[in-house]
Every structure is written in C-alpha cells, then in structure tokens.
Length: 172
Length: 202
Image (cartoon, rainbow over all chains, first blue to last red; front, top):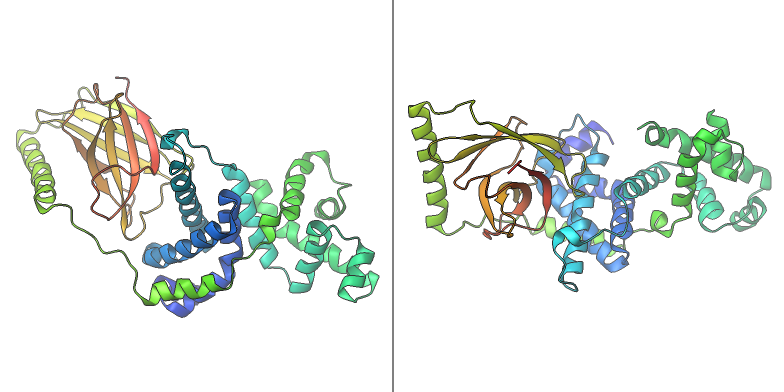
C-alpha cells in the first residue's frame, strides 16, 4: 500500500479508509470468522475493526506495515466479541474462557489470505479451485474454459508466487 | 528450494522434510473455508456510515469528584515524595510482566518501591501497542480474594517511556499486578480485557 494512501488514512480521509478496507477486508474477516465461527458476528467484528482503525488512525506510524497493525486491532476486537458471547452463556471468569483457535493459526490465516489477495485474479482462482474446491487440473481447465497447459503453467506460477509472499512466515 | 516448496504446496509431494510442517499448515489454510470467505457487501456501507456519523466515542467523565480526587491524590503524593526526597532504591522489588493471549507479544517489568505515602510502581513494557483513541490502559493491584485497586492509567501513544503509577495498598496484600484495556465510558470497574499480568513475591 503506497505511502500516500497511508498518510491519508492517518489523516482519517474516508476515501483512504475505503481503500484500506478493500485491501484488508478479506484477511480481517478471515480472522474474525476463525475466532467467532459465525458469519454474522464476524461481519459485525469486521465492521467494528475498521471503525476502530479509523478512530486510531492518527496513532499509526506510516513508516511501518499496515497489515500487522490492523491485525492487532482485528484480533482484539474478535476476542472481545468472543468473550462477551461466552460470558453471556456461562458463569466462567475471563481467565477461564478459552479461545477456539490458537493465535499462531489466526496470524497464519490473516497472512495467507493477505497473500492470496495479492495474486492476479486468474492465479488466485486456480489455487481456490485446486485446494478449496478439490478440482484436478483437467477439471479446472473445463471449469475456466482454458487449455490444460495454461492451467498447469498458471498453477505453477501461482504457487511459486504464494511461496515467495509467505516466506517470512516460515522464517519468523 | 523455492521450486520444491512450490511443488509441494501444489501437489503435496517433493519438498525437504524440514519444510513440510510449514507447507502443510499453508495447504490446510488453503483448504479452509475461513480463508476464502468475504464479509457481506453491506459491511463496507456500514463502516462508512459509522465514520460519516463521526462515531468517535466521546470521553465520558467519571463523577467529577472522583476524577479530581485521583488527580489531587497523585499530585499530593508526588509533591510529598519529591520534597522529602524519599524515592529510595531500598526495598525495590522487580516483577516480571507477561502478555496474555490478547497481547502475546507484550513483555515487561514492574519495579515497586515503598515511600512514606504508599508504593510507586514503574512499569516498562515492550510490544504493547498504543491504546486506540477512545481507550486507555489501566494498572491494577489485585488480592487473592478478587478485589482490585486501580494504580493509574496510560496510553503509550507518543512514546514508550516507563510509566509511573501509584498504589495506596500494600503489594504484599495485593500481589497480582494487571494491565487492562479500558474504554472511555466512565465505568470505573476493570474490563475483562487483561493484556498483561505479573505477581509479586508477596
């Protein structure tokens, strides 16, 4: 995300907030859904995350990456939602409430989704059809109406790009 | 190595065994519905409506007498100890502070010292983000009966210098130190968002 957008986001400009939302709505929703396990609650948590981010935008250091900063707000917001939900149905104290997913997994979900969103649309679609839908290369070729050879080269390129985008996770 | 990793990510075969745990976790994420889900289209409009309405939370004052009492109390302690020169390095205790699952990367220490008017607590933290607008951090001393006393508030927005806080209760009787994240809603009770914890020797 370029410096100009980040500076305008820091200034609270609505157009910049929209840009940030478009860029990060997927990863933020993914964290919320992985913690809350409910699409409606995850949508509410996503909404609150971006409003909180706008409220706190002046504290964001534009020299740093926006992703980890947004991730921290999204994670806190989803955990708050989860704890409120759990405390309304149990008498457990906050210390006894366990989250349904580990924080390492949540961070990885955020990063994998953020990396997928940076792929060209046609490469991302090949990865989705292959891994999430479980289609073979031939089935993908039929589904997308493209030659098998194109699917193979596109798939190889997509996975190569994805590995490059996620290398810091392995090294971190 | 990158080609082997990409091939393993794509097909599930061929990579160095040392790389497989990481690559298997990425493959699992790619198969997970959560990774591919998007928020409903109306969320964008709801966010922009909230922003256009200027929904920054207003700071609600606690009861006026309470806010004034806290400030005057802190000033009085500061003046007395400064004039008397009673900041002493004697009887200092250092307490390790750790981040909870809300802020796992937070780490720090609380140094506690006794004065004639109470106890000072100097909190040094790393990895705790600035409190968002409309919120702040609050320090607490808790006893084992679940009773807590506030020792001060801070926000970390401008720098990460140590935070000075004050306790009128003996850490020996209130051995747990918590840091919570609070909303500016006028509620003096501790929230359930505990971000850091430590415990004195008692």
